[in-house]
Image (cartoon, rainbow, N blue to C red; front, top):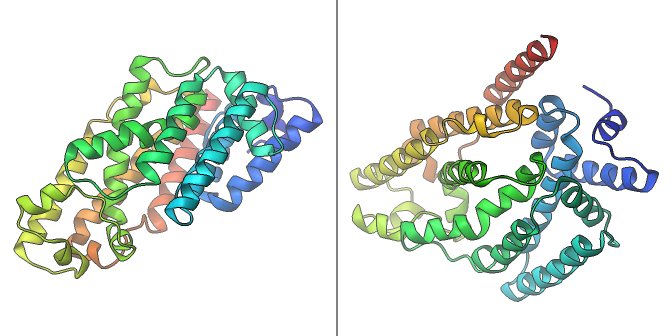
Length: 305
C-alpha cells in the first residue's frame, strides 16, 4: 500500500497547507469509519483516494449534525453547516480543514455543486425531520432528497466533471439497494430507538403492527412480512448488476467489495428471519476479511498485467 504522502502526490495535491488539510481529514475518517478508510487505501487507485476520503468525511459530518440533538438543535446546526459549506465551496477557504479539503476536492474534480446543495437540503428536511415512511413513494422521495445525493457527494468525485446521467442513475439503483439492506439489518436497533424505517402501509398489508415488530413476535404474519421485505431488497440488489461498468477503473475493486458485502449482509438477514427483530445483523468478521483479501489479490493481479 502506498504511503499517504505518495497518495497525495499521485492525486496532484501539493503545497504543505493543502496536504496538511487532507491529512487531517484522513485521520478523522480513520477514527470514525476505519473499515471504509482501509478499504479505500487498500483497493482504490491512489490518485482517487484523497478526493474520496474528503468526500466521505464531508458526508459523515453532515450525517452527524443531522442526527445529533433535539430537532431544533439539528435544524440550527444544519443551517450553520450549510452556510459554512457553501462559503467554502464559493471561496475555496474555511476555518475548518475538512471543509477546505472538501471544497478543494469539489473544485479539482469538477463535481457539480448542486449535488452538495441537494444533500444539505435533504439533511435539513428528509433526515433531520425523519418520522418514518407511510408508503413506498415516501421511501423513494427520501432516497432522492438525501440518500442518493449523500452518496454522490463522495462517490461523484471519482468522475472528472461529475457523473453523467447514466452513471448517476446507476448510483441511484445502488443507493436503493443499500438503503433497503441497511434498514433491514438495523431493524432491531432502529426500533429500540423509536424509528421504524419500513413503509407502514406494508405492515398493514400483512396485518402486522409496530408492536409486533418491537416485541419481536414470531408469528406467521411477521415472518411473511419480513420475507417480503427481504425479497424487495434482493430484487433491488439484483438491479445493481452492471454498476461496475459505470465506475471509474480505479474504484471498481472498492465498489465490487461493497456490493459483495451488501449481498453477505442481506443473506444474513434472510437467514435470521424474526431474529433480526431482536438484534441488528452485521457482516460478521470472516466475510469482510475474506472479501477484502480476495479483492486485494485481484487488484494486485490486475496491476501486474
